[in-house]
Length: 151
Image (cartoon, rainbow, N blue to C red; front, side):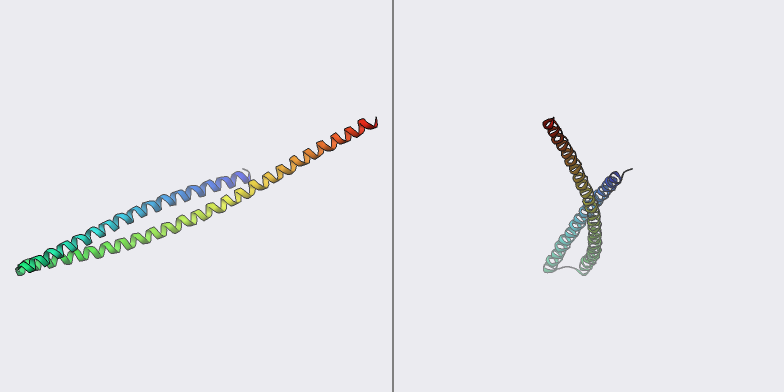
């Protein structure tokens, strides 16, 4: 296997790895949006329930109902805390996936740079060969012309 085909293969593998990292990152970002939406829903529900408690207190509430409201609000607060922790953990996964994607992109860029340099060198060598061939043909014509003139 030639060095250029090996380099092309490595570049393809790096591109595949970068694409997979991108897909993982997109999935992690989608999960982050979902967890964030759940947190927002819980926040809204908690606010609504606290407003209900305030309304009930203005209208008069018995101690047992007050206790039930407070217990439910406490369970909502615990759920909110878990949701915040889940969002924080998801944000860390997004950050890790972002870093992984960036590393894979850098790796791919390095291979692409090597491929470009190799291609540019190959083109320079071909241009030199073409120029050499052209020079040899011109020299041969000139020699024939001189030979024809002297005879």
